[in-house]
Image (tube, rainbow, N blue to C red; front, top):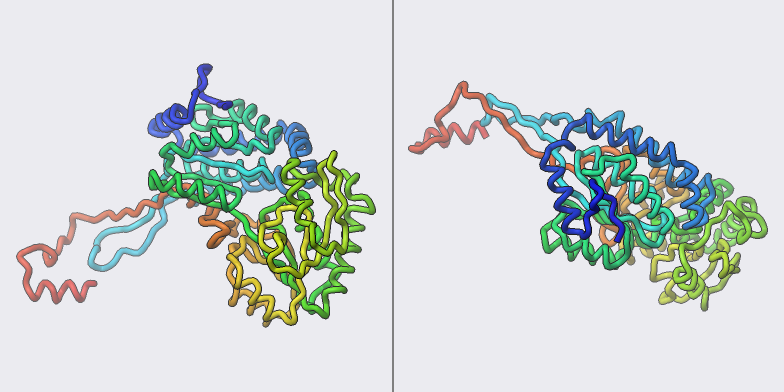
Length: 466
């Protein structure tokens, strides 16, 4: 276990780390808006001064090009920090609400207060963004934070553990590296909130552990995000946006289109358009293209290769075990029990599922767990409304993929098995805050109708005041 701590004698276990952070929180230092702003500014400085080192780590872990690393991780975080800094005072200000007549004269308001000491467990596919974006929200809300980066993205994890204590308040923000054992130790502790990004199976473990202490959780999971393509669409632009969203980070994105639903009569035309765009974006040899990422490790590489068994590959399918890369691959699967149609793919394989009409597409989606994201490409407003009204998903993007993530005013989160709770922008601030309800009464005009002894006339007045 590697721990970044407040002193030269680093905390040696999870309980000591939590206690140290708890002591810091109760000192009150994190409640000051000046402290919060300073930490956010320092986090931005961490990014700016170590840009190349961050890009190198992401390249080492996932083969990300600098453009992908900037789009999906670095630039996203800088934008998130800037948005938070520009809105923090407004979010933290008392939020006035109406006061009923029976409580007059008086005033009522909500006051956001930090939860305390929170645990943030990151994911390996976007190992910088998915750890530090929740940190932005947690710091803005005034919490102390324990960061647990993913051990699978080892280079990024090591870099975060090295840089965080150099730039941020060591008493309030700490990092623990490690694997399953370290995470299990952390989950035995009594945190004020746990924020986990990852898969459904581990999400259940996190939630069970949190239940022991009645700890609230935010679970950002995943699932099979459908992409519905209507024949009434701009096919050229549709193909470009699907290819970009699906094969960014070699398909290892929790909100990537997991499969396409398209009418049988339009299927071949769509496939041809996707093939054309894939060639334009990644060339004839994607496995040697530096713009195309690699699979995180050998285990996931083998898992993805096994998915191609008994699947009809209609584009791509080649792999390089030494580089841990698999080509952008399009498949058709007729067997409903095939793992490609049952499990979240989380890789560069895109199944195409033909339906007789778009009503069947809606039925297909609704027969499965609610997805984290749903994509729809159409120029028909009536069908757009039908999809919105008759399906459920954590997030919906119409005529594009992934782009809803660029709007900090749109909360991001799942529904059902794709997760619970949300963040980004004000939603993240609220997730890591308790909105304390406050009423202040005046000593003037104290009407005694609520006091005993009770009389019928008092009840009559109370009913009118209610």
